[in-house]
Length: 126
Image 1 (cartoon, rainbow, N blue to C red):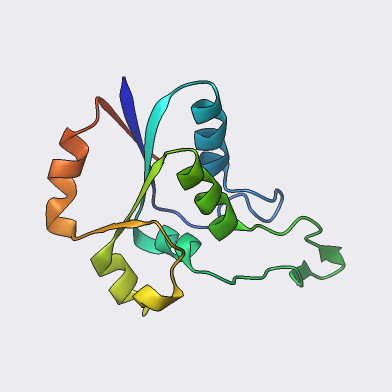
Image 2: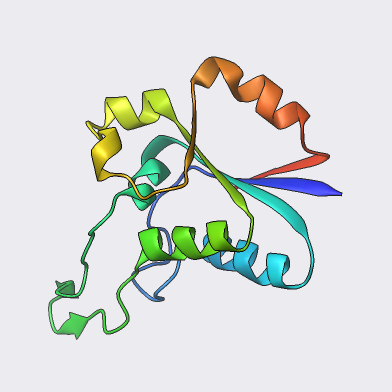
């Protein structure tokens, strides 16, 4: 069974933890043998931008001691043969150009989304 995880809400849970929950779950499930893909859309396309550094993040006296490294997490997923997709229009709407993205992403126009979904047995939208 092939499963596509869709992440739309960015940075949820990354203040308390170092990882996005679904990116982490995709890593864990792939390690257990699952056949997975990951689609970043809406604000989650920001995950694919190289060079992000949240190491100085602080709220009052609370400091994030394990900052997220989401671009690195995505690169690691792709090394495990997980296809990672991003929606071109979502990148453009946020002013993200191709040169700022990590290598290996599969960029697709929004109009091709139905075809992508059809290639998977299940779609989990988070």
